Length: 464
Image (tube, rainbow, N blue to C red; front, side, top):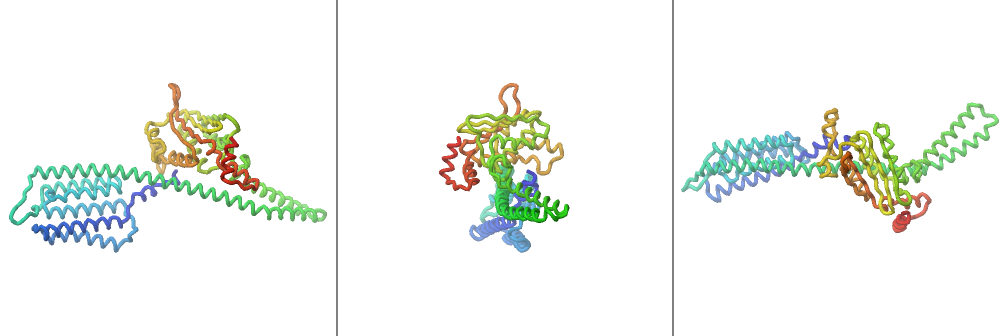
């Protein structure tokens, strides 16, 4: 998966647009201004009005500078975003210092920058911002201007209450930070995995398009190659009595190369299971052999068995299914100690493919979260072997399951049963109708016939 999900891909998924920060800060500036104006002129509280608006203006100036300097689509790095949030915490602390410290009910707004950081930045940045917020809250509990109150009275809240507010800020910062980070991280990982799957599907779509281009090219090139062959034969016949040995050899070479080109084109347009072309139907045994062939040189014993009721099923070549099944076989070979067993079975209603190895089997976490992205047991081994870049991302099984189930199959994971049995078991099962979907249409297309969807469905039942 290294060519699908890279480190930069993962990092870019975290980065937020500058426009998001600017808009949130304008919202905060509006709320702070409304609170100061309402307290000063609506309630008549004696605020240090000029100093408060100077602090609020600092945020406004920063917003204007950022808007002028960078485009709205600019994405902030982790360090830049952390610095902007740190500024917001410090600006809020300065405003609270002027308006009563932790006695001010708006002191709970310390949670907002930490919450934003938890959803967008790595945990270490969020931890640093949380410590900054707690540190400033501690200073405000000890040092602050008096809480603005009406002219005919003075409100002094007990220190025990202030300690309670400080504790609430501490626990709220810790809880909301961890909770928001956990939820955001799961959402982010799922989004990245889906994006990786879309890249795989796009690549397979390109391969399918190349299949069509190859068939069209083979059809178009057949006529000029036939003409070249006819002309070559005529030249050989006409020049045979007088041609030099070199000319005769050149003409023979030209005929051989034309025959070779026609053979290649016939493979490209072959639709039967043994043709080896791009567009073809394959039998179940042929499909299994295609999966096993690349693994025979890996030093692991591969045992392949097949049995079933009735005629052997065939399917259309599906690049997505081949990719997914190859990924599962590759994992089985990687984790096996000495042996991998691949068993193909079929009945008149079902088709099964079971892949077993004699390794350690699936861990409990993998079995509980089967098919979810970023579930892997490869990380530690690959780190020890030095393969750290892009390895062990846990996307292989997720993508394989997604691609295979798109064909109508069901994929289940388990461990070998029995006291002496060990290893993982992956079972893929199709309804036979789904496995053979489209086979009849391909065969009719090969014969130049038109096949309707209803005929295709009825023939699929007849084939069983």
